[in-house]
Structure formats: structure tokens, C-alpha cells
Image (cartoon, rainbow, N blue to C red; front, side, top):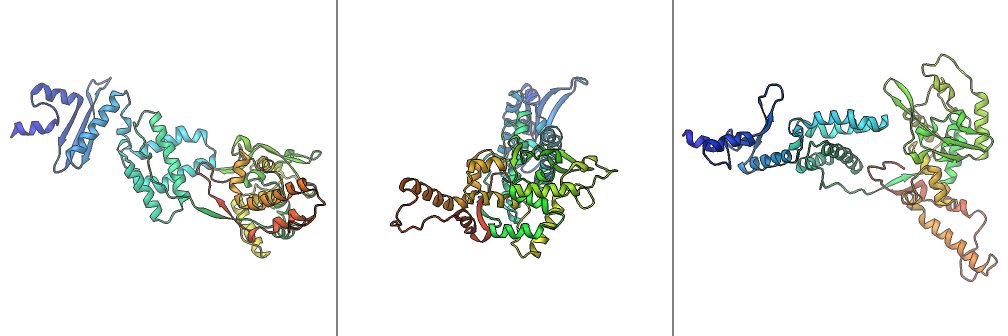
Amino acid sequence: MKHRRRRQCAIGVPDFREGVRLARKVGQIVGRGRRRWLVRVFLGRDHQTRKRRYLNRTIHGPARRAQEYLTKMLHERDLGRGLEGAEITLDEFVDRWLDTAAKPRLREKSYQSYESLLRRYIRPVLGGRILSAVTPLDVQDAYQKMIDRGLSSRTVRYTHSVLRSAIRQAIRWRLLLQDPTDGAQLPRLGRREMRVLTAEQSRAFLEAFRETHYGALFALALTTGMRPSEYLAVKWQDIDWDRGTVSVVRTLERARGGWRFSETKRARSRRIIKLQEWVLKVLKVLQSRTIQRSGWSWPDAAELVFTTPAGRPISSDKLAITFKAALRQAELPIIRLYDLRHTSATLALAAGVPPKVVAEQLGHASAAFTLDIYSHLLPHMQEQAAMKVEEILLGRDRPQSSGRKRRKKGHSEAVAKKLPSAVGVVRQSSPGRLRA
């Protein structure tokens, strides 16, 4: 009986005394019941106590699965990889990754988004598992649970991007040999509606806000296409009154314990935007009415162009509530605060502004990226381009034999009005580019 039990202690090792001793120095599989195995991997001796150190892991299933796990761990050890990944849980690794790898390179808002996604969707499902024991099937199951909860494809893909970034860092830290997120099947990204204001609705919007506290703010937002975090961070020193420009050099974000200025979304986002003449006049009126206050809890707020009526930095979330309430009062389509950026780009492209210029004003990496987002405008732009080329080839006073009416003076404005009831279709961006 003892002889049979010793044979079970070391699977794949000859049943003699020296072989058992060798197994204990390399790796062991010990039966712990029906379809339950204890896998032990020898990690060497402790430098101080000189005692043997083992990695112990319980495997459920057939003996073949335990043997595969033992082989994998021995392979990682032979490659010189540390086996810390087999000793810590995914929760413990994520904590370390967020503090040492993610936080130093991410903006505060992005860091909070990463932490939130992992806390809400990954940790409850996989957090208690040993890092090296997480399989592609486990990852796929976590994503399926998100889909079953009714979460959007964009959220699932964004979560996958964050988890994949963490796992790849684990590989670089030599905690893992393979990436369990490889091969995960992600839900398709469909096309979603982008709601924007037409030219006529934009005029009504500006008129409705003209005499309000935020009139100048929305005038700047609609005419420049700046992001909310960008125009809320504009200081008076950023406006060049002689050249009529505004410089985008920082963003404003809410941090723990107060407000802070941060870098722009990308290096390309640092740019200079030409202001329309009437917007400059509105800003000058605002500057003349600005009252310098003292005793700020956050002194830099005194330099901001846009503040609350109490003179504090403006929260984009609270501004969005005010924005939507005013839209309802003016009986205009309800759009997001960020959609003012899309409206600005849409009006510019519909008016015939070159995509390269629009891309530079928005801070996009390329004109191709801009056209991909606003692809719903391409048919109108192609029609306008065809008419311009035709005028060059045939002359402006050509006969109307082609059946097409001559282009009128207000064609650009008419094109803007033809946008389909303030609703366009935009391709959802990848997780790395959540918003334009």
C-alpha cells in the first residue's frame, strides 16, 4: 500500500528512492482526492534560512491538467522567469501595476477611468485568481458577463484594452509567459448616431445663450471646436488680441482634493486657433466685466477666462446639465456638451473648409482621421468638389445644358442646412481613441 502511494506522489518519475528525491527538487504532483491535485515546484533555497522554497498550487480536473500546469511552470523557471506570477493574485498584481506603471504615465482622469473599469468589471470575476492561472477562457467569460449585463461594445473593448495593457506589463516584468487576453472575441463596433446642430439651430443656440453668464463660453466652444477640458482651462494670457488667436496649451481637470491643470490629450492637441471677429468682441466685453477677486482656495482660478458666477473653476459635468436645460428651454435638439465640438467640425466641413485645416483646428493627428469621423459629410463634399471642378473646366458662364443648376452664392450655407435633421452617423473609434 505504501509502495503504491509513493508512486502517486511523483507522476512521470521512476519509482525508486533517488527518483523521488529528484522529483522533490524539480516538481511534484500529489493526489489530494478525486480529480484534485497538489502541484509543487521547487524554487530553490531561501538565501537566509537555507530552507527549500516551493510553489504550491491546487489543480482540479484530470491528472493531465496538473501535469500541463507543472510543465508550464518548469518551463517558465527554466527560461529564467520568476514565478511571482504564480504566487500573487490578479488583484494584487493590478494594484501594483496601477501604482507603479499606470499612474506615472496617465493623466488623472485616464487613471481614474482605468481603475474604475478594472474595479467594476474585472476584479469581481478574476481578481481572486492566481495571475499565472488566468486563462483565455476566463478572460472571455469576464467579457461575456459584461455583455450579458447589457454593457455597450465600446465599454467591453475599452475594458479589454486596459486589461491587455496590464497583462503585457506582467509579461515585461517576467511574471507571465503568455498573454491570456490574446484571441479574445470582442463584440463588433457598430455605427452610432452623432447628434449635431445644423447652421440654423446653431444660430438659435447662440442667440439663446447670448445674454447668459455662459454666452461667451459657448460662443468659443462652437466656433473653435475645442474640447470642454481645453476651453475651461483657457487663461487671459492665452488670447492674442492683436492676432486674434487663442492658444490651447493645457486642460483643466478635477483631481482628488481640488482642481489642477494638466497636459493636453496629446502633443498634437497643443495648437493655436484663429478666432472669429465677433467672438473676439464678446471676449473683450467679458474681460471688461471680469472682477478680480482675492482669497481663492485655488489662486489660479483668478486667471481663468471662464468661471462660475461665484468665480470658481467650472465643472464640465455641471456645465453639461446647464447646457441641456437651456437646449430644452430653447426647444432645440438635446445633444451632449462634447457634441458642440462635432457641430463645429461639421459646419466647417460643410462650408468647404479643407479637412486639413479642420484637423489642425481640432488637434487631430491627421486629416484622414477627421474624415473618418465625419464621413456622413462626404457625399455633400463630393458634390461641391465636382461642381467646382466643372466650373474650372467649362468656365463660370457655361450653358446650362447639363441640366444642373448653377451654383448659387449661398451654396455652402445650403449644404450645411441639408444635414439630416441634426443627426449624422459616425464610426465608433477604437479604445485608444475614445473621442475625437
